[in-house]
Length: 397
Image (cartoon, rainbow, N blue to C red; front, top):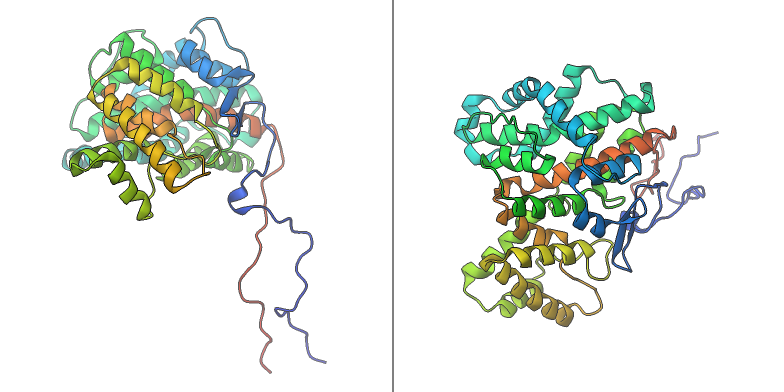
């Protein structure tokens, strides 16, 4: 009697649950951290309007809200702790930056070095040097301490890498300034104006967290394995490098440059781009089907800052809305957070190659909050896939 082989006529596994492509609208876990209501154009942080938090709270206050669930009245606590951690581990961060980017390599590469890649490599190296254990083996208090450490050292590692890549020396700050002001000072080498710090802080708080996006989901999947926090963050950073995710801000600014360089009338340029099938960076969102509330808020911030670039952006958005409605009716394509974020980051003096790393300075807070939340659940993520390949063939006799 011959063995019966599996063929294409075999019954399909009836235990599989069919889900939409890209997991669209599939709730894969529970969270109390944030909620995005795409149809309403609204999102919140632990019961607080996220845009209102961005307008009124500091980076440190929003950080504590996402991590601990309460919005403090001042910056004390996590802010002071972050500065202390940066000072305590300054030499380690410097050493890791040198290992990630050797001095001679830095001088030859110049500004082409990708600081985000350096962060993705550097955070696990820091964790290894400090002997951080897997989340599975830690109590909640220790997990939180490690999360705070990673968040505090992220901007310091990024700015050190950036300075070394430009052949500059490390900038040591003694001032007990706020988290955002310290980042800008370390990055640019100049004391930032209060208005600049306020503008960047608004953006960073608005960008801290945004539901189960690709990088956050990646972080939670890795956290579900019980891996250490640096591994979770490195995975999130890998997802974040994609042009369709964290890599979009600088590309949105490049769009404005292309229009100006072409000398073409804006509406005609847009019609040519959209008709050719090219993606219009800075417009459209995977969740929002109305105006992105983050974009609307940042539009107000940059309008207050003023300047030729702002005027160009406002004109471009108006033309894009008109053309998109004409060529893609019913799609609900509007300016997303990256569009006006790019204008704001440029105004703050942040180099374009540091746009996405700056985004990561904010989003690492959201990732950390989700990692801590996921670590409380002992169930590992283990989805299945619908097999579409060739079935097992009969064995020749």
